[in-house]
Image (cartoon, rainbow, N blue to C red; front, top):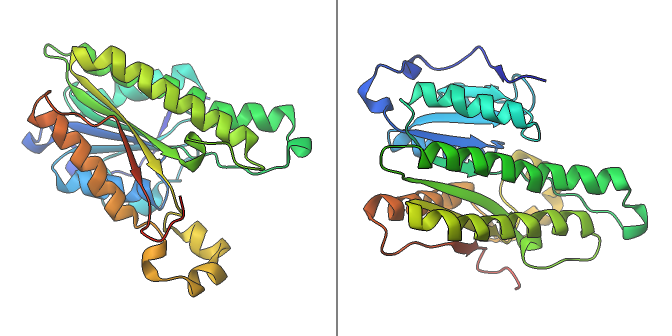
Amino acid sequence: MSVIKCSSRSKSSSPNQKNQKKGALIVGAGEGIGQALVKRFKEEGYVTGAARRSPGGLDFLKDTLDVPFAVDARKEEDVQKMFEEFGEYCDGNIEVCVFNIGANIKFPILETTKRKFEKCWEMACLSGFLVGREAARSMTEKAEPSGTIIFTGATASMRGGSGFSAFSVAKGGLRQLSQSMARELGPKGVHVAHVVIDGAVDSPFIRTHFKDLIAKAPSHAIVDPHDVAEAYVFLHNQTRRGRSCWTHEMDLRPSVEKW
């Protein structure tokens, strides 16, 4: 399946405007962290691009998103085409790329089929490699290499929980990928960070499927995606300030989370 650029985008997405000389691309933009990131980087003056697999899957962002893509991030040619097309909207200056695909699944080991295991790895790890590599290519090919690549991790990035064999392998692999990229790309001027989200993130999905638990918990027991977005902007601001003090790994959790 080729990249399908959604037809609806805001009028502000003309590449000729002065405030569109820098781009922020969010791959895996749902109604939680992804949505908050698009809005926050838009406020910072970035051309905002976002990707989901299904055409129309980003309609909830139509008022703030400049360039929506329908793309399967597991497909190499689609990812390459997405970066090429998005680069045209920001004069080749992609400053930020966030890989935010989740792929959280839970099955007992005896019920984890080969297909489930492979699909989880493809979505959360292989896709991260493809997106991270193309982001690195775009950022290192600038006259002065620069940019920030951020991978969204999870509790499973750090340890394998019961029932999470596939997810833990995928997220653990993504974390190792981010470390390798950080060590290779940092000296070249590209900041690579990995953010562990240790807790449930506020979103329509969480509020629908865990409404009873949320109703009993204090308001601060669930991760506010807007606070996550602030942390990601903080990481990118480190890149913009210089190269003497960069964070590679950051973990975010509610104050009441047991860890």
